[in-house]
Length: 293
Ligand SMILES: Cc1cc2nc3c(=O)[nH]c(=O)nc-3n(C[C@H](O)[C@H](O)[C@H](O)COP(=O)(O)OP(=O)(O)OC[C@H]3O[C@@H](n4cnc5c(N)ncnc54)[C@H](O)[C@@H]3O)c2cc1C
Image (cartoon, rainbow, N blue to C red; front, side):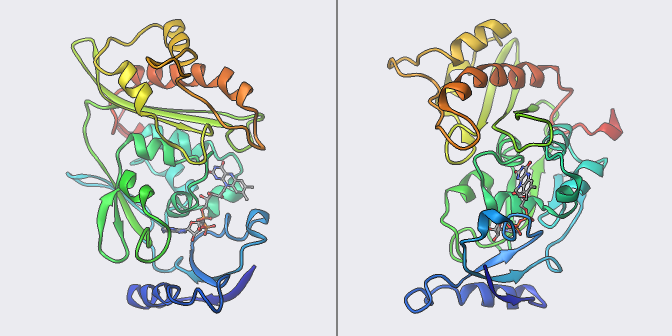
């Protein structure tokens, strides 16, 4: 429940409001202050038991996708629909944003809010981790998304994302895929892969799985299993992913949750991994945009 609403006029006021969260813990433990962007998560039924004060950043966070020599910059306030519509959005990121099928939600939900929500079935965390996106925070820090996801929430930890940057490297191939019960539903499983091909071998693989654990993250053991090898045919990829690692443990041990059982997820994840590994091979370079094809 929203206990209070703040609309800061500038970054300094926003940082001061959010910083005041710390130290209020003992007398009002539930009244934390949280950044509010599109509100599709914070104002949803899922947050009904969360007591918070909203710090509305919608007027402060930059919006839009722009391309420079250094890469592709995306304002944290950019909505999913703006990601889908921009000709500068890399194709794999556009596919991930379009995977949120409800257009009303796509018009409100922001890229910053999606990373802040950090859900197991997140649409954008897998593909942005595969891209190895860098973040600029409201307090001036710059760090990779991967490091940011390791930080605790709060002003001294994750703070607020202002913008993201994806480096341009046309040798990197990226693909994203999801699995949901019906097209309009949240993903039960998601996956993204990024790598380059040297000779006929996979190098620098970043493989991210969503829906198998509490948060979508890279899967180091699977990355190591494919790194430095030629890309196997689909049946071999699926057999490897559904088999055991070098220590006799399953490569992937999904969790049961409201969206799907562990058994079901295990049966689907191997084909999703094959889909992104093979799909990336067919992609025409990481940073390609539909306008430039
Ligand atoms: C009907 C429905 C369908 C949905 N479908 C999907 C889906 O397909 N895929 C999916 O991933 N999610 C889905 N969601 C969940 C939600 O819409 C998304 O996670 C969305 O991207 C959240 O963005 P927002 O701007 O609305 O965030 P908000 O609700 O405003 O905030 C979400 C969280 O992020 C934090 N936050 C907001 N902005 C920032 C920032 N700039 N920096 C750091 N933290 C920040 C907030 O404090 C909060 O903790 C769905 C929700 C609904 C209600």
